Image 1 (cartoon, rainbow, N blue to C red):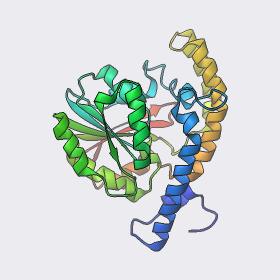
Image 2: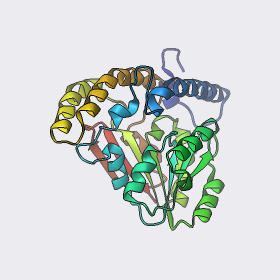
Image 3: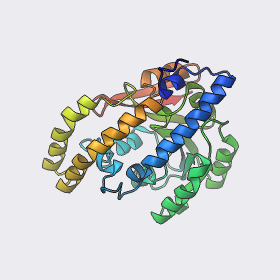
Image 4: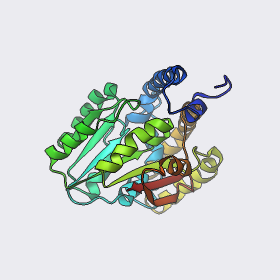
Length: 291
């Protein structure tokens, strides 16, 4: 590895074989990623947002609102094949109930929702879901991303919830990890799940010029068609600068795989059944993988 590579570029090039260099880089990545998520927590994961009252949700909740009342999350839930008594396992779920809220709106009879996150996040996940009234729907499984996937814990939850079937999903989560760590959870997920669903960046990054050119006219169209309120549009415009700063800091730290690269790295495991790569002006892809 050369010193000129970003951490994300080094993670992209990381060997799947354990070496002292790999272990050292993984340790460095875990520390830097954890610090990054802690620092951005107020902006990303609270409705109030940061000290200026700006929040990640003010922007992302409007993405896809022209196509679905729940935006990209609603489109993703629609893309998944969810049947009655399905248990949803959300890898790198985040700490808020935003995705579960959308799932329950369309699938109130789902068997349950399992948030899979690093151990340090599990207390805040339980607290946030309980406070929002979703405590009865959720199980939380600690997984530190760089370790073997907790299959037995997930199978125990399926039995406890009397689930008819399982789907495993990640909403942006495959963006953060090296190749081996993605394969570590996708491979067993394809055995115990009916399908695996992923939301990815189509080209591995947001293109700032596309967002700058498209976002303001898009917000105006949402307001004029009554898909968003004027207040929502103004909050989004206020938060877009902070969103751009988040993106600039995020990109050098993460591998940022594209949907095509994900397909290549998983092609020996399963069949990519469906891909929708036309979302968010061609920047976002939904991917389904099954055996």
